[in-house]
Length: 480
Image 1 (cartoon, rainbow, N blue to C red):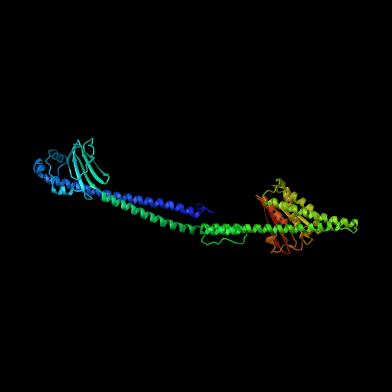
Image 2: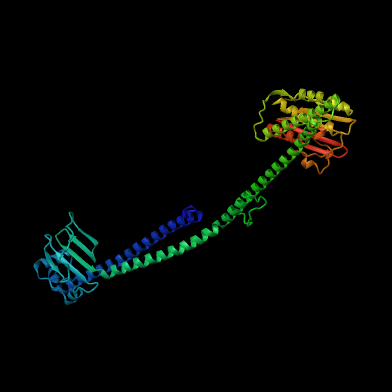
């Protein structure tokens, strides 16, 4: 049973969910922080506004004191002047300020003033018992900060001449609003994440649907239905390209298997004839109750011998083809010249050519190359031998070789009957015979040109053919 995380769809879903969760969480945290930062700035502005309002009320309530010290000039007192009136103990608080900085209702404001020793000079009745005044600055000037202590937000100041101030505000309602906003933001993020998961699951399923189709088709092909192919959408997507590649591979695999089946059938058919001769002759000679002459035994032995030679030639050709196909031809390349090899081949086939009144026309140039001479002889014997054997007689076979720039060209030409155009694409197929009247008993296995092409492919060479019925055939071989 397939485990969930072995599925590509599940893996895509997990990664999609993880990335989506991180993105939504980062967005929610950022939005939460920005919202609280804006809220804190608004609270700080409100505290500063109440602070200015408190100082203005103190100035108005003690206007006579400041006017006397400033020779009748009206202006906002400096913090030093405000601190001095606190030290005299003659400070007066207006009723408006007492009302504004009193009570413990939600969102109340409070204040506290202290001297350098931390002794309270004045504080509102609703100020907390524990007040943390800022330490006095070491240098000339003042220091100030906004801070949050529990559900209180404070603006604290301290001056170098010993004056300390705290203006505070209850932010319990803002904190509750902040928590509600956080929970609603989290719930919205979770909802969005779940919607994203559902969408991702749907998209992942749609994305891998073609893969499932490819897998199912490949499974049916592996089970033996070699003619089935993967349906392509024609969108030229990556999966469509993969489908085309797989279909092409299946076509080649099917063709190879078909060739193997045909090859096995042809090889069995070719071997069956000599085996039948061997079996029938041996049974005939072993049959009791009938006397035979020495000539009868000799004829039977000759038939068996010829059958064995055909089987040996066929097996050797098949073995050589198998070595070429497996890229382990077991050949021994060396420096040689093609021209002497052609002369040797023609010498071996001269008796056959003479029997059909065919004359050789040789045009040979020195063609040095690095190759296995034995394999080259196989190529020459098959090409020149075919030109003679398929010739109707009383004609010519031209064989030439010449060096090109980086290649050597071998040409075998005859003025025989030629090859029908319909047979030309199949002449290199194994066990294919253009002349259907010829068979293995004539010494034609149908492997000659297939063997030639396989050897040349192993050597890195190539072969081409031109033929026209009634005028002859020309094979051109190029070797590197």
